[in-house]
Image (cartoon, chains in turn cyan, red):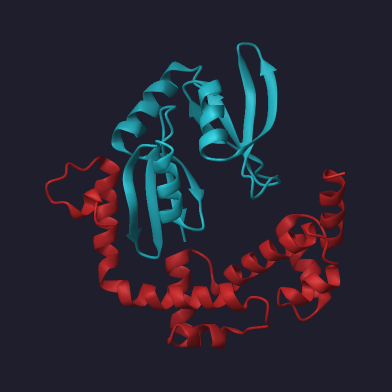
Length: 127
Length: 141
């Protein structure tokens, strides 16, 4: 058994693809049409053979409720590792990304939280 | 870091920010210890290419070997040795992708024998260093 894909619910796959590639800098890996939605994954440009992130449509109503509850509480739905949180914070801010938490140190990690425009808070972590 | 809502007593914090603030308060008395652990981690980030041992790493943190292992594991969730292996394998993958030979990679990431390098690489990535290099190559052809 291997962990190859993890998923993130997004309110609009096309918008999500744009944000995760154009703004964050990930690369589209697979795209398979599936009825009105797509099997759509992205990977890190630094790790193209790494775990894929599935941008999953919100086709199931209770999922919308869950996503909104997480968002309202400010809880990140997903977490990515970066080498330099401060640098990423500045880069993304310049691109118009909204942050709910500027770079903050706790214990041995520094983290920051932003909105992905698709209904999620995303956390960046520097270890 | 000044603009953090966690440092602003008048800010209304969401649930996650409240949790983070609690975490920060819990960690605060150990700041000096985290600084030492970070130093040891940076020592590994810098010297992973040499065959460094646990004593040298613990020395970089000014901690006894026993305390160092215990606190490192508590802070990072993995032992110093596991961390060292992780960065060595990650660097080995980078070097293999840029076409450096397996024998050379083994030496450059601090392994003393090619056998232990190959075994560990296989355990961590699911394939041997030469298989890894071959698949990466064919992906770009």
